[in-house]
Image 1: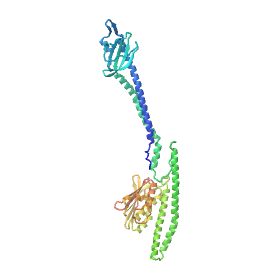
Image 2 (image 1 turned 135 degrees about the vertical axis):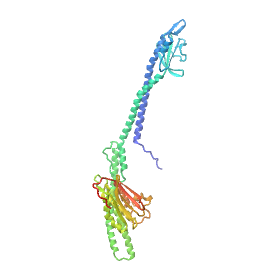
Image 3 (image 1 turned 60 degrees about the vertical axis):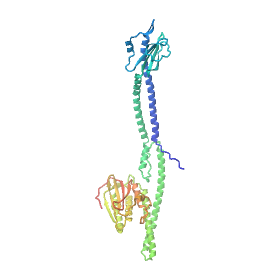
Image 4 (image 1 turned 45 degrees about the vertical axis):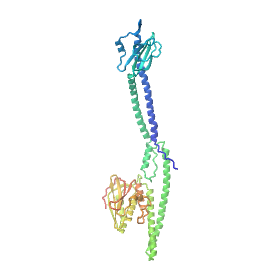
Length: 463
């Protein structure tokens, strides 16, 4: 049984998952500490101001024949208990815990020592209040309570004064953490982008010049792997090139002997057999030539800095000499519509690519058909295209015909299925794109697009 796929884990996410919650936790801890400090400051400050009216009232309690009573005018009481933000109330009890002045709604004060004030929380008309309580030498208890509005406002003001800068610092810290993490893993992103830009045959080593210490060993290990793959590929290419090269000589000799034999007077049956051998030899020779071309394409480095600047128009113009006689022999109208198309690359490989495209077009176009070769530039790309009015390529096979040794079922001719594979290899080596489409009427249009470069000189178009 296959193991369950483990979801990919992001380094960026793992770092941020640690950093951001840690920063937020510090902000929360700072907020809690600030709240405790603000509560302590507000309580201390307003408790002292709340004690003053309690002491004043305790000093104005008189005891006469009628018992203890508050010797203070109503106006004085109102002035003493006035507050623009909170409601203030008082209560005075005698030594027997009877209310002799003030409100009845405050709970009895706790036992106090004479001259020692006490502060505690209580409830007045369903509102929380803060109460200051004192006891005089005659056993009189005085309580003064007030609601908590200004205390809460002071707490929020202190919190705002402390937390707003803290939150701003936290946001800046999170942004800096994000930026730092992004900057820290940027080398990994560059490596990823470089690998995505490469084709499957680009086995150049990755640059270790700017690699951080943490990923340098991974890059070296990856480059060692690429080196082993390059060595293995080079061995395969040398074998392919040597085998193809060694095959060409005996095949050329065999072809010459068969052609000489066909010039003699032979029985019809023998002539047929020799003719079949000659056709098979031509096919084998063509295959060896294509295998050698494929080996050259795979071994080339078209991205080298010293790659020459060439004009695809010149490449196509030179192809006229090589293919016009073949086209005439097959009664095919081979035309050229050429405009400047400057690129950087290997002229031999470009010629090999175009030869394979023209060879395919002529090979699979019926007698009396047309094949047109075009070159030019569109935007940032230069192109070479070959269009024919042959049978065309079925839509389902347009991608597969670029594979090596693939031939569309039922296709006539003696091709080996390597022509388009060689063309694609050359295009890939030059960082281009190979597009297979149906032609405007019937047949096939194959276009190779390459990154354009500025031409050295402008030449008149030829046709």
